[in-house]
Length: 344
Image 1 (cartoon, helix red, strand yellow):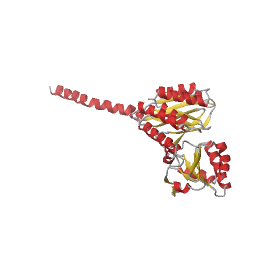
Image 2 (tube, helix red, strand yellow):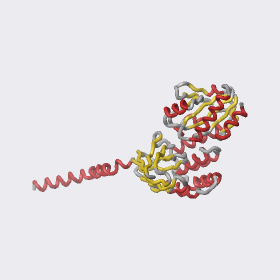
Image 3 (cartoon, rainbow, N blue to C red):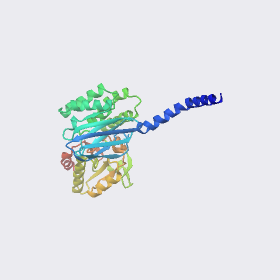
C-alpha cells in the first residue's frame, strides 16, 4: 500500500507539473522563434553585393545590411509586432516586405525586373506581390490610380499604409489631400493601429502646411548641437531640402544647391534635413563634399520630427522661400539650379 501510495503521489505530481513542463517545452522549442522574423531569397542579375534594409514605421532601428552571395541572401531580425521592412537595392529601387512575429518569407526575383518579384510567406506579402505584378507595365499616373483602388479594397492590410506613403507622399509631386482621404479609410479599418493614427496626423499636418504661404515656426538643433530657428530664414532666399546618403537623386540635388549657394555670394542660404539613421554618416558626407548647408539629422529617418512638421516628404524634396514667403515646393533636381537663379 505504501508503494502504491507513492506511485499515486508521483502520478498526481506529474499531472500537476505536466502543464508547466509542456509550456516550458513550447517556449524552448519555439519561443526563440516567436519574436523572430526571417527572410531568404534569390535575386537574378545580382550575383554579389549588399542590400540595405530599414523599417519606415520604426519596427526595426536604423539601417541594416543584407549580404548577397551567388544571388542568394538571408536575413533575420527581432519582430515583436507586425512591421514593414524596406529592402533598398543598389540602384535605390525598393522592395517592401511585411514582417510578422515568427514568420518566414521567401523572395524570388530579378534585379533588372523588380516589379516581377514574388514574395511568399504571409497574406500581406501575397497582396503586395499581386499589386506589383498588376502594375508591371502601367504608367505612373495609372499606377497611382491603382494604388488608390487597392487601398479602398484592402484598407485593413499592412500594404495599404505603405502604398499611400510611397505613391501619394514620397513622390516628386505628392498629393497630400488624396493621401489623407485614403488614410482616413485605413484608420477606420485599423482603429487600434497606432502607426496608422500617427501617419494620419502627419498627413493632416502636411495638408495644413502646404496651404500656408509660410513655414510654421520651429526651433531645433543641427548636427553640431547649435540652435536653429525658423526666424533665421525670414530674410533673403532660403532653400530647405531633404537628402540621404543612400538616395542618389537627393545627393545630386544637394550638390546643385551647394553650388548655387557658393555662386550667390551669401545671397542664398540653405537648410538640409538629412534622413540618415547615422548622424556621423551625414556629417562625414557633408564635410567630404564641403557642403555649406546647416545639417539637421536626428537619426529617425522618415520619422524625423522637422520633416513631418514642415510637410516635406522623403529624400530630394524641397521648399524655396523668399523673405520668409514660400514661393516654390518640390522642385525637381534637374530644375533646381535654374529656379534658384531666377529667384536670385
